[in-house]
Amino acid sequence: MSLYKRWQDTLEKQTNESFAEFWERYSDAEKSIYSAILDKAIEGNDLEVVNFSGKIDELARIHHTDAVIFMGFIDGISESVKEAPVLDDLKEDSEISLDIYLEKLFFNMLKADADYLYTLPQWEQVLGSDKMAEIAREYKRSKTFKREGKKVGRNDPCPCGSGKKYKHCCGR
Image 1 (tube, rainbow, N blue to C red):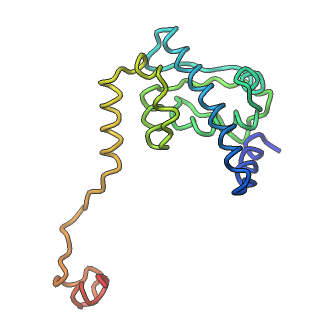
Image 2 (image 1 turned 180 degrees about the vertical axis):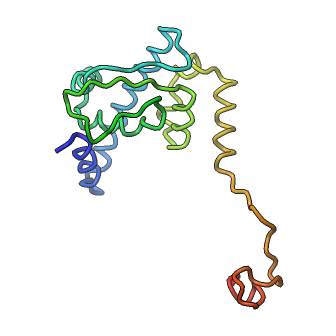
Image 3 (image 1 turned 135 degrees about the vertical axis):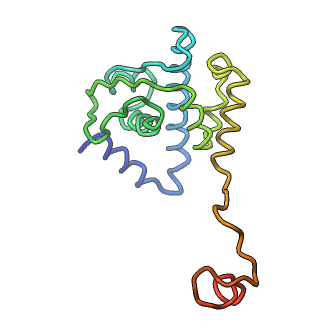
C-alpha cells in the first residue's frame, strides 16, 4: 500500500474520540517542519523559494513524527511547490526535493485557516509585515464573491425562463 493511501486511510479512520489526539500529533509535526523550512530560508537568505529535500523516513524522524504523518505534510504543501511529487508513487524511502514558494505557502496557510502555521514568528523575518499584510489582503479579495450580471429584482421576470416573476418562481 502506498504511503499516500496509508495517509488517506489514517484520515478516514478518525473518530470523534480519536480526532483530537490525531490533530495534536499532526499539527505539532507540521509546526516543526514549517519552522525548519522557515529557519532554512532565513539562514540561507533565500526568502522567495526554499528547497526542502531528503528521504521521507529520515525527514520524518528528524521532525519527531512517522512517515504517514509526514506524508500528510507533503500532501498539504503540494499547492505551494514548484513541482509537486506524484503522491501515489511515494514510499518511506523515497527521496523528495520540494522547491517551496514562500509567498504562496503563506497564502495557502491563510486559505487553510492554519493560524498555528501562519503565525509562526519566522514569517516576520521571511516576508516582513508589509508583505504579510499584502498577501492577507489578496487572500481576502480571493474569497469575495462578485456577481457577474445584474441583480435580479423580485418583480423582474425569472431568469429560468418560466415567464413568471422571480418572486413567484426561483426567488421563493
